[in-house]
Length: 107
View (cartoon, rainbow, N blue to C red):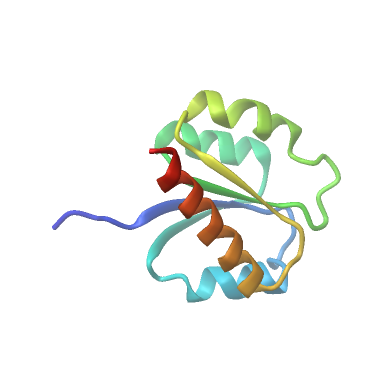
């Protein structure tokens, strides 16, 4: 059986995850979600497997993920980077829906 789940990487230096992001990941059983707790760990995971979406949790992150914004598009050309700034899970769902619609229109 083929795995059609979207591969998502959530990068957060905050533990536990922000409330909205935590709820979003728990209810998202339609996607395969992996977690990284540092930019270096995220880069390592992206070297091992392609991700369609990378969610960067900016809440509590001082660096702003500059390294990931530069490196991820090179490692995985098809990756979409979604910044998360502490919004509710419904707002995150809406952002993801808008991104999916935009990707469909680009094809």
